[in-house]
Length: 401
Image (cartoon, rainbow, N blue to C red):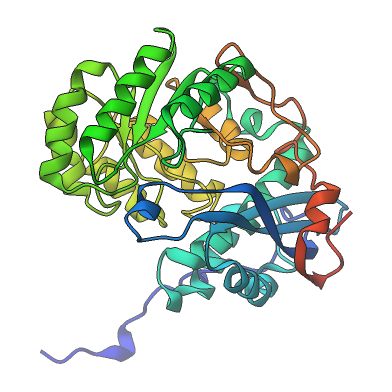
């Protein structure tokens, strides 16, 4: 039967990027200052990936900051990061795509995230493109919370004002057992509530020796975790996990390759110790699949690695729906706000590396970290951050205050 096209009509669809501004739009992005900051570490750090020759020791952190201003004079500051490689590429990409959201209402955060995602679509859905988008996304959320006069956690709907906090400071593989014990003591003096040590050496007996030495050293009320940094295969991880099941670890982190969701799921089914992973995932799709497929007991998804606050909220909702706990990777300055909006108790990972970037400090006491009471993220870039800046680009009006 022939189709008579003259009598057929297809309903018009709204343009994906949205229609021209209506009465609800009362502001617009007027300018940004993008900066590439290289933050040096006091001492290069080595985990199992370095010991096996897969990576070089970590000596610096590359930060991409986005300082944004709107026509109504509102400001927001966001950032992205990478380790070892990619900082210059992320900065160049940020400068290239920033125009895509200029002039748009900064309150339309979800729509602006999609505009940036489609602008970088040829680079793939994830990876460097999404990590770069995270700088813009966090700046927009920072601005929105500041306009509301609320800490970001309160804007999102906080379930608590303090969260459990742990760290790995001094627990890397280059440290001796005595050095690890001393570092743990310093951390506990700071008010840290959990200690995570690195494992994954070629000699598993050495790992076990260090684990037992630290477990015996730590008070019983201090949580203890281990992190293999993706260095085991499935058989070895299961064998090692069964041996340490009696130690009472809070979790085993990244025993397998980050993308081996099936392998992590098998470990989660067969070990008593919770399996934590997800920090290396670089898209919300991966983060959601990890939880849907039972690939972890604890999701460690990193907000900036998957594209910022907007996709992290989706990943967090999926974790809640599947009764999976969260312990977001690194970035305590951001994750303290996001994890506070999660219904179940979460872990925050303490790293002092980023502290010199900001004028403010988080309050830590009695094993917990407090949500800041300052509006937005509650952060301003320090003079040191300006000194470590290797490149700057203004888009539209200067975004730096």
